[in-house]
Image 1 (cartoon, rainbow over the protein chains, first blue to last red):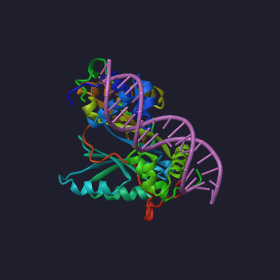
Image 2 (cartoon, rainbow over the protein chains, first blue to last red; image 1 turned 135 degrees about the vertical axis):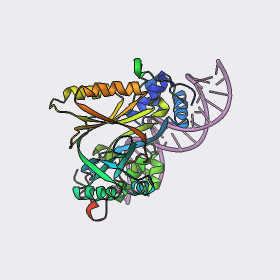
Image 3 (cartoon, chains in turn red, green, orange, cyan; image 1 turned 90 degrees about the vertical axis):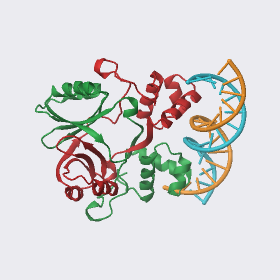
Image 4 (cartoon, each protein chain N blue to C red; image 1 turned 30 degrees about the vertical axis):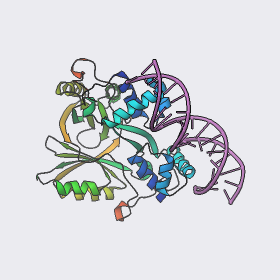
Length: 161
Length: 161
DNA sequence: AGTGAAAATTAAGGGCT
DNA sequence: AGCCCTTAATTTTCACT
């Protein structure tokens, strides 16, 4: 938590965010290091919590979830447990962000049909008023941030390992 | 694209969404199949586009991105190319959804400081009016959908491989 | 489609610079 | 920290079912 990420660490992060199953030998080639040194760096990145896991990405349409929606929820109450329980039960709710602003939660919901989406939104509406927008498309490939911002306001304060 | 996912395929998807680096030998144990049969199934899921890739997940705070925000953009124009270009250049924009509703785009933006966020929002404001909400927390662990909905409206029409 | 075993490749650990 | 070498494990291919 006290040491900075160097250029090699950033190169590793860029590669594993692009291909989480890359072999250490191949990764080592790409970051110009030996396989064992590379593995040791990845181990440290994992252990220090910089890399939190590896996930396969699935095409939602191809597995039958034709509909993606953004649901915003105004939640007047302060008791968040029942909502958290619903989030845990409903695997169709892919992501949940608690935010500032008028809407307390922003949720990303996958559904197999409009009837299915309606069912999920109805369940959420138990907790407050909802605003639902359907997703047409995702213009961005999935990705994470790359190297530290190097210009002006982008400069990192002190990236931690 | 014409064949359904069976229970074993779903089990595989659940496992690789949880741990994208799981060894085929271990995955095989979990889905009660031999390693080679498991590998063949994964190969087909990849080739048919069900599994679109594997990504390492990174803790944004630990790499210096202390701030996460949801930016909604009202985009009056129809020429989307300049915006797409900005999205491509700005790696801080982690996700972009084009949606129905008043706001045409919903973006997830990571920033190292409020000054950095301001810079990104200013760049987006070139295209239309923006609404920015900061993210307090993410109450959900990262995950994808699991097995086909089996009750009523959740039932999958015909999951495709 | 799945199994089981062999061959090729990769991962993990110890010792050294 | 990193590199090299050895051993263990995994991946990949293939003949057979």
